[in-house]
Amino acid sequence: MATLSATFAYAGGTNSGSNIINGQINLQSQFSNLTGNIDTIQGDTVVQSAAAGNMIDITTMNNTKVQNSQIVGPAAAIDTNINTNISNVWGSVGVTSQAICNGASVSTDPTLTAVNSYQKCNASDPASAVNAHISNIGGDAVVQSMALGNSFQADSNASNMPIVSKQFNSSMSASTVHANVSNVGGSTSLTSSAIGNTAQIIHYSTN
Image (cartoon, rainbow, N blue to C red; front, side, top):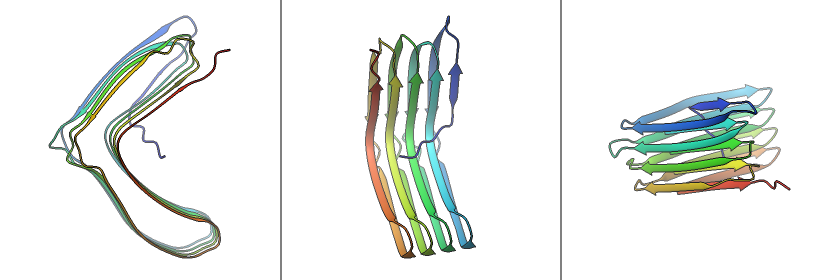
């Protein structure tokens, strides 16, 4: 999964704690459109387009308390589109398109990690679309499209890790891939996914 990061909070130190309060409200639309033709490249080729409503990425090295609130209003549309022709590439090709309404990531390394997260996506549509023609590739060819309503990730090796995560999604998520791929020397992968709410919480062993 590709990761978007628009807001970053960092705190370090062994004798102090971090109290992070994040409130994000987005009421407008975000559009990302990428069109390009690529031909005759000796190395690799990477094409990426992303659109997001609210994003936060938090990394700390001490005791941490996080209050996170992310809201996208009903008038917002979050769309990303890629139209590309790629040919005659000696290396590998990667095409990635991602639209996300709300995204939050918390990574800590203390004794205590406490997170209370609320995400609400009322956008009309996080939508991602890829239209790609790929030919004559020496390496691999990978095409990915993803539309996400709410995404929450947390990881910590803290002995105490209370997490409260609430996700509300009333949007329509749409992901579309149209791809023609030919004459590829390596592997080929086409992936399209549309997800309303997703959360991943990893608590490492403290033994």
